[in-house]
Amino acid sequence: MAEKFDHLEEHLEKFVENIRQLGIIVSDFQPSSQAGLNQKLNFIVTGLQDIDKCRQQLHDITVPLEVFEYIDQGRNPQLYTKECLERALAKNEQVKGKIDTMKCTFFFLEI
Image (tube, rainbow, N blue to C red; front, side, top):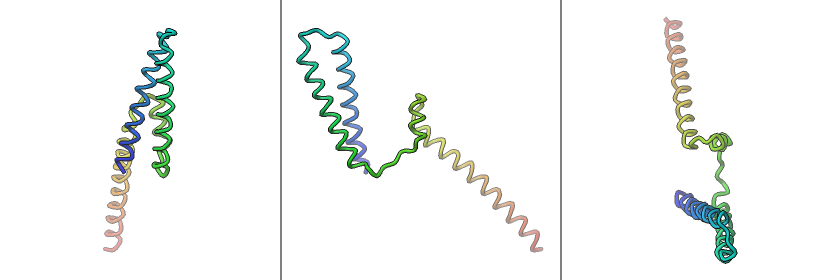
């Protein structure tokens, strides 16, 4: 499963690099750089096709919308996982406390 993500990550990194290079070409465009621009555009189209092929392999993966909100806010999406685990641990402690309270209450009722 991890190799599917590695494959997608590799294609995304190449795509981002091609977009970065395209931005450089466009920002300082000269008529003599038209061939390089065309080549870079073809690389971007090919990159999008490669990413789309990866999508087909990962069709069963769901991402919580909150992760996208983290990204939109400029936050690290890995913090979402960390915060979810922290909330789960806190809730676990609450439930454990309630169970312990109930055990004590039932113990005293039985006496």
